[in-house]
Image 1 (cartoon, helix red, strand yellow):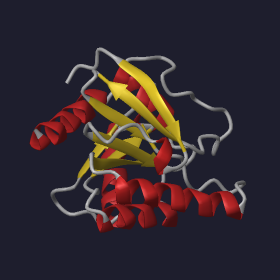
Image 2 (cartoon, helix red, strand yellow):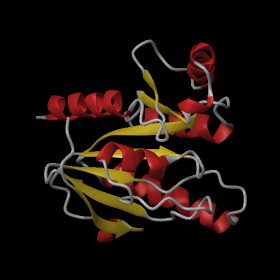
Image 3 (cartoon, one colour):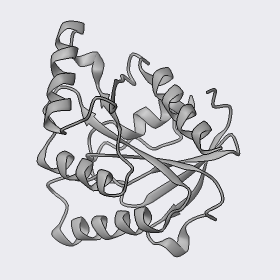
Image 4 (cartoon, rainbow, N blue to C red):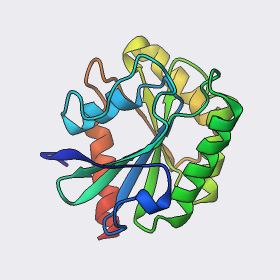
Length: 197
């Protein structure tokens, strides 16, 4: 898959603000400081499509990006940032659940975890949440440039074990800094979209 056009289409906090449910969507979810914006910029070849924030937990909206006028990438708000108030955390759950429940075009959620650390309790909770909605199966292990090739297999094995992944589930190491793993992830997204059509 080659992304030649990507633009922010809508910013929403509730279903009434979503764009029309007329195209397939692939969403991205991850902890607040996992490097989601950087990865979305890598995939789309745009330096500032998704704003990279210096303050984790800044994205508290669902951002819809139109890609090639054919499908959408959906950037879900980051979870698990300790400094967010309880009411904001509860609001996150309601916002994301409403999106999962009502969006017919949603095909898959790609979950991001930091390759250097075992997935947190919130990462595990998120993966189980995705399983509940049948949206699981793909994990992008970010910041892969921070570990050696030998360490990478060990860390991927820890991710697989902690999230209780099946043999079919994919873990794709990615590095926005080194620009690696993006093509493999785009290939996976392409196959998800082609199964739909």
